[in-house]
Amino acid sequence: MYQLICRTCHKPVDDRSATACPQDGGILNVVYASPEIPVDPALPGIWRYAAHLPLDDSAHIVSLGEGGTPLLRSAHLGAAQGLDNLYFKNDSLNPTGSYKDRISSVGISQLVEQGKDTWVSTSSGNAGASTAAYGVRAGVQGYLFTLERAPRAKIGQIIAYGPTLRSVRGLGYDPAVEDATWANCAQLCQSRGWMMTITACSFSPLAMEGAKTIAYEICESLGSVPPDAVYVPVGGGGLLTMIHKGFQEWRDAGYIDRVPRMVSVQALGCDAVTQAWDKGSSMQALDDCTSMVSGIILTNPPDGELVLEALRDSNGWAVSVTDDATYQAQEELASQEGLFVEPAAAVTWGAIKADRQSGRLMSDDVVVALLTGVGFKDSAAVQRMTEHVDLPLIEASEILTVDQSTPG
Image (cartoon, rainbow, N blue to C red; front, side, top):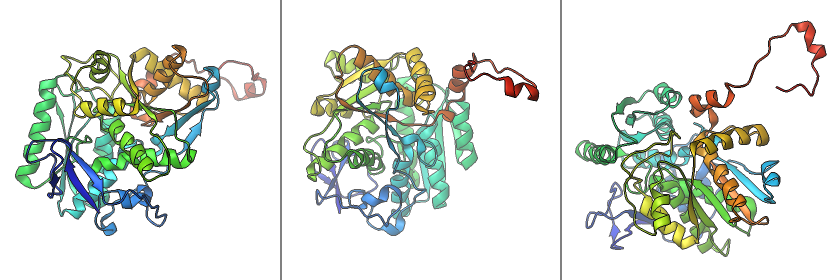
């Protein structure tokens, strides 16, 4: 049992299809009747936590086996930086290659439960691919409006699932275009009885509940002692907001005694949340975006204020990472941890390394870096990471002469 409650006026909203409070336009929060979070291993994927996910009937579950991703202790990078307890939550191992599958499973399940037959979303790639895949699974159609600068590899994955796809000029680096795109998507859905599945609390409060299961899984892996700090990539801001909520719910259920410090990680050059945090001010849209780290570049994060609230509540902080440092982090994760992730995921390791070197993190801190998407998502980044490596051509007879110390 659950209710939609306005975060501003705190009044309940009975309409399950509502994307905002009808009274004041406030962002909606999902509140459950009981703080207990029983686990049902008979249900698929993240639905083992069905008691704390917004669906009335488990018969409507649409799942591809999302969730249950590993929390891996660092093999080499942590020791190199003097971090004794560094972990990577590898959510790139979800069915379509990113954490978005957790959100899509809840969102498309809700679409089915509400009797709708079409979804509408915006995405730079990961959310679009995920929603399209789950839409196919449910047998519903969809419309995706993507960024003008979205990587072709991500677009190719979306095309394979077959939704109607359009690229919007200016989306991703023009705040006026972002606002107009979201408003028009909402109007389209309202007029045609479709469901908006944009992955932000501001637009899809029910679907976003799926992301909080990341916190549940981290806590189950570590036991009764939560991490000291959790680093989360921030684009629109909904992911960090929901992971923070997940830790709050796990604490309220009595399984842990505190919430870890949440750390917002953005790309320098498109970091409205970091700028607001550093100034101690409210969110202000940026005029432009100069970063090329696909997946976390938005000039006006729709859930930015919720991120700031989560940082204050958890005694966390915000940090930004340059594109060059992000690409270096991506290479280090692959070559030293065996973790092949996209730049938007590697940004968390770049931030942890910087914070350790500045003294912000202590050697005995338990630190979790969330890795959000697989490396194949951004083919340009893969090319950049590997193009300098020579591939020698040899004869078969030369194989026995290769020395193990030979570079490459």
